[in-house]
Image (cartoon, rainbow, N blue to C red; front, side, top):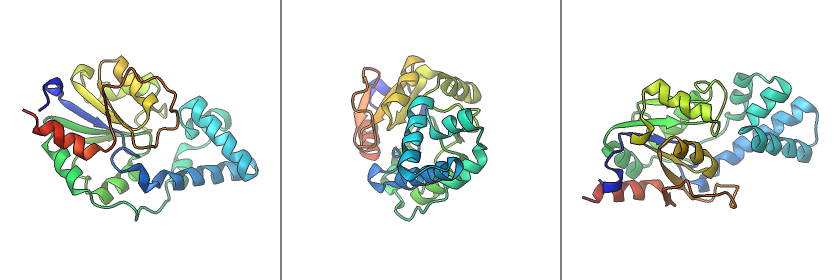
Length: 221
């Protein structure tokens, strides 16, 4: 193991655009369904619904959080609607499965999605049995990353010491709270990040693809 990572006992992974490549463009389907949901809910034209959606995302952390705050939307109904997408583009990722299996310690998913959606993705990638647990939006009491409470709740639920933990995410802003509590941070810079001007001093490692990086740190004595 890379000496710098020797203290790591907990390997924590985001889901979307982290465990699979952003080029799969899976989130574009989710994004389109979120816009359609807002169109139907508020009776808006497409372009205005999309503007509202992005405003909720940037101001509340997720579109769902904004809809709940502003319109008291049922989160279960919303998530069931937006996650009803095709996943044929995802394929079994043998190198990633093998690399994660070799990591010493605990392995967990920390996602703003929900468990049913996460399990569908993990099944497609061959990773369903690779993780101890999935900490989803409901486990966060619907307060998503990057809210500090999401990270505190995650650590409390699993009895995790942040100083012995590494967190991987494709969103720069989601890594800042992790670093603030002592986690080692890994940014998957694969083009999914929509805030290129964001400060990045809180990032310890930047990688374009996850599996080769995991393989490289495991090969270093």
